[in-house]
Length: 343
Image 1 (cartoon, rainbow, N blue to C red):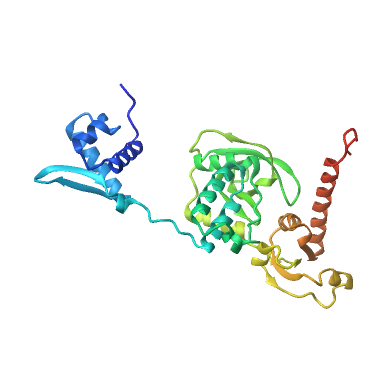
Image 2: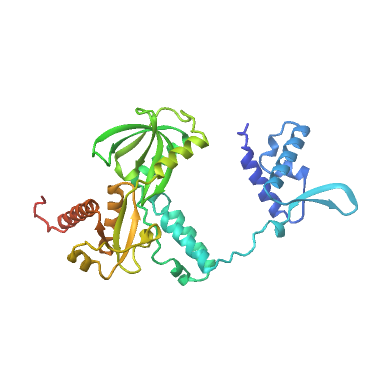
């Protein structure tokens, strides 16, 4: 005896059959030819199964039409009205295609990059042309990929399964193992974060994926914990998003670093700023940007290279310089000729 077909697969089989029938399909034809209905043990069972499926499709917005044979009111068949079911031609404005291009740029993690690239290629084929994305030029979201941690964490979030990983704390640099019940992955401040419950601390915490070292390991069975209530999750996200009363003054090259411009406000330098600093930023736009942690903003600013200079505070400027020096040292090591010992 063959395995019973899943109800969702049976529904899909029914849709395919009713879309492609040249005229109509009677109940007898459906029971005989559509995979899944042969599982019904009796006529009454088939009637209940088919009526339930028909109502489900209509609730989903699929127009299942009832067709009566001419001259035979009791000879009833079914088909899907293709004119009502078909989507209208897709016509994207330049602004809409630009917004979708931004979304595709946002989803550049390796686990989803291929799917978003294919989707965008198809949308451009029916859009306003290759140049229509110019409206979004310079607005590309700067969100670093989640790396190797993204996929196992996403799977764990969906399966409600605990995870264990080694994490390097931003504030202290301490490296220790964490056991976490993962609730949600969120993109914030230029990177991916995991929000969940730290089991050892018995409290909600957020973890930047780029600070996870080594492999993420699943622990225990699936569905091992209950998700927080909507109020608890909202409180955790609000706490995560809360900004401290700290701001940085950044000097931006014209028409660059649009993501920083978008969340900041135009400002000017105080009168007591040293002359050399005032000269260095004379041809730049000054923007005051709020931030929560020095290391977070430093990583983002360093990613812009010479497009962004830190006017103040000095601590943020020093953090950016440290990151740039490390990057320069790595580049120098990679460029060393063969046979030369590296540091």
